[in-house]
Image (cartoon, rainbow, N blue to C red; front, side, top):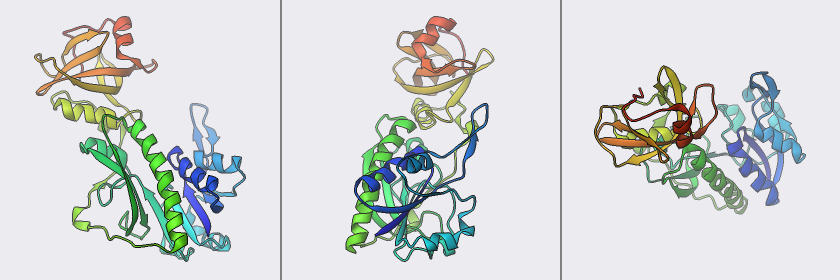
Amino acid sequence: MKIVFAGSPEFAVPALKKLLDGGKEVVAVVTQPDKPVGRKQILTPTPVKAFALSVGVPVYDFAKIREHCGELCALGADIMITCAYGQLLTEEVLNCFKGGVWNIHASLLPKYRGASPVQSAILGGESHTGVTVMKTELALDTGDILLVKRCEVGNLTCGELTDRLAFLGAEAAFEAVELLERGETQLLMQDDAKATFCKKVKKEDGRLDFSHSPQSLCRLIKAFSPAPAAFCNFNGTVLNVYNAKLCTLSGGKAGEVLSADKYGIAVSCNGGSVLITELQPAGGKRMKAADFVNGRKIKAGDLLD
């Protein structure tokens, strides 16, 4: 079975690698165009493109995939596997693959259709999430389900959970191709009545409001770690916050520092407190909160807002 693989970020690389390592015939990779990165705006390929080129797989970085159906059809592929590709597919693109287009989505569909399923699962307080392989339709993440893999959310940050889901996505991609090769495609329809939707998160969504509960603040911090990072203000400068946990201290007003020591920075909020354990001051580097305490003279009674 000939496969075209479409993906862009680091999250998609394990799936492509798993297919190749498992002997599957990936005839081409489709990805997003190179983009300028960093202060010097150096034109940089996507992680999927960089990996594909390193192992000799042909790469197409179409600005608009819908304008290249002729080239896609000419590849003679049976199916396309997509994983965080980043472009909507038209009916003409779907029709290029007689065996269908199959998408690896990082949620337990029909929950969290859309652009930020990993962050949204953490924000929603889910105990479990996972990856779903579904047949792609024109509507967003609505296709019938081929297979599902689950994992615990636990106390993982978004970065940690994304890494775990990337591994699951790789396993799911390989198993999906195996099922398709054997013709074992018993699909499960999604229950649209249970569907939830999530949009791309923005930096401003990560502002910490200490009038909220400690549980919701911890979820927000973990959901936005490492990027775009939750944040608050301290003495007129921005603090990015990368990790925190629930704390047993109480008292004080919202945002008041209850303690600042080798364990971190305990901050009062609505109904309890959170212990900030990792942060980044404006113009500085990411560090343990204890190191910030040692160097910046933050103390009990100070305010974060």
